[in-house]
Image (tube, rainbow, N blue to C red; front, side, top):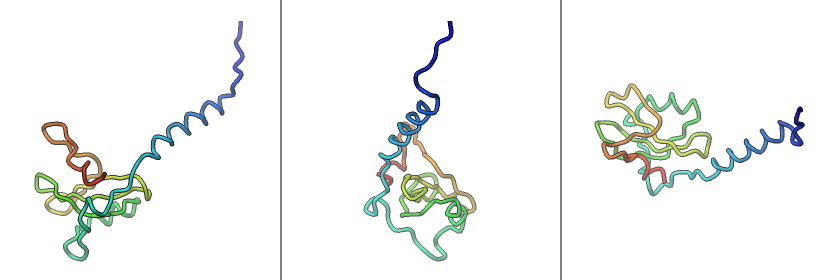
Amino acid sequence: MKLKSSRPLGTVLAVSLLMALAGCSQAQTPSAADAAPAKGGADRPAVLKGIEKHGFEVIGEFDAPGGLRGFAGVVGGQQPAAAYVTADGKHVVVGSLFDANGEDVGAAPLE
């Protein structure tokens, strides 16, 4: 016996997509009060220009451990993200950085 679905696959996929997008809508842009303004000019790492080409907008700078410089920003105009520039200024990592206690060190500046 073959069962016939009363809902087309497209409807199920559309509902799934809408539910996923609803979860993303809760993201908040980092406030200016949480991150100090990013320094411009020669003091700002040139490597940040590379990620700005991919939609990362620097909102401000925050203290980061291990000789890294932390930058709060948004991707796509709404998704908060942290970027960490290495001490030599040649590399940048975008994402979460956790300490030994499992705490995200960039979470507070992004709230």
